[in-house]
Image (cartoon, rainbow, N blue to C red):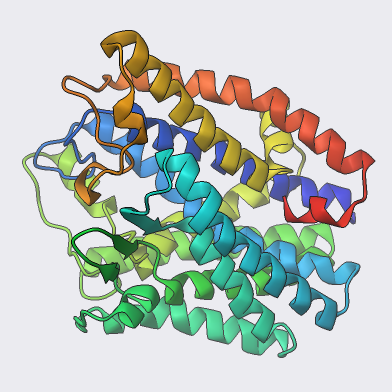
Length: 384
């Protein structure tokens, strides 16, 4: 089985993750102000689960970006691929700093700028461009060393812009008028991308061998997470502790660190993703057909869904308060992505209803754009 059958499973997984991502961003805009869903002292199991399930999004973005780069070698030379990765990486960084900053805040005052996932994806692509001519085994080793070893650096507390970009989230620039905050440190995410590139090799294998590998490695990653988390000695800067009851103790066990993504965070998320890829090797269930469509146009979905959520937020502000100036103001870090009006925030049922609306609107838009990309061959379409 070659080509389309293999790529379909990747598109479906990516699409599932994009749909879950919209839940997280809907919660960011419509959720209760001041509630941290992963703070076990003041959250509920339902709020925690709503946030926790979206932890799978970023690791899949980086992993499958690397896998997609490897699959591009079917139609590109390593030199052509390196050039494409470099230019597309620059494009993603530009999108983060210019277009996405406006989409998220609806202003261009640059009082508050966060370096988020497109920034990190762009630099990961540029980093991968420098690696693609190395032997595949060397790329895999580099990626694994970054993933497994970067928690050794957790004790290094260095208030430096370079360190904020590479390992520990922090300020890159800060004055009384402007701040730039790096939320996605590059070292572990580049490691995930490099491992994803090496993962692409299994899509040159026959189906039985590939499925066996995905099942074996996926289960091993899940088991490694359980063992290392139980030991509580390495792999995450925040050890788990017993809580007020068994349920919340279980939540503490899986409450791993995303910024930067710890070894345990990545084992916890990527292990199940490999198992999902394994399951989808047998074909795509009908109920996941929409995810397959969305997974074909991830960047288009990412940009437009953010705009849609923010636009809905603005409309609701107008209807409820007669004004929407909050949607156009730069927030502080504690209230990112926007400083909500008094009394703002929906309970979980409301969050899920807004999320369903966003996904329902995005699906036909993604289907239309995917059909456009299939009909047309202009080079610019490969960057969207």
